[in-house]
Length: 165
Ligand SMILES: [Fe+2]
Ligand SMILES: [Fe+2]
Image (cartoon, rainbow, N blue to C red; front, side, top):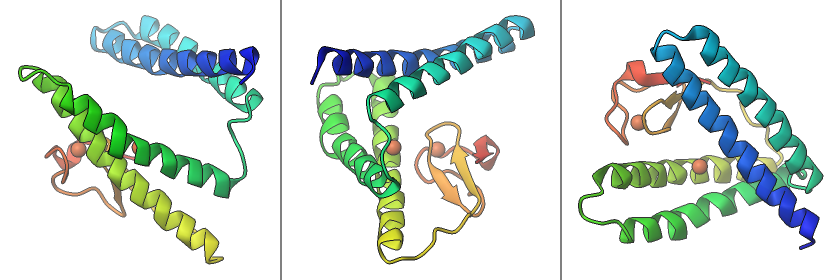
């Protein structure tokens, strides 16, 4: 990998993280009644998304959809089989919040992996992918098709926590 390719990879990771961080900071400011300040965080977050996507495109990180799907499946599989099991194995007994964060994510990655695999199979069979409604759990990220469940099957959050995508 060239130095610039390496730097694009680092810059993409940093800008992506800054985007999510600023959105979290905006939510915090919002909860403190600071609407104007929250907006500034969201404005910066939006700009970091522009940077992240530009870096990703420049480093060739977006390919044809079939390739993108295979890459997405590989990423989810890595997280399910290696990353989260490794992180969970390294937890100290008292680190319960991190344990919940890792295990919830790991379980949702399994759902993502299956969603991507099903879609890939459809595309490879020449079928189209239906434009269905999805609801994502705001606590763990679990995606439900059609309608939000009464209770999230992964984290137990109530229906009110689900957000339509
Ligand atoms: Fe995922
Ligand atoms: Fe959930």
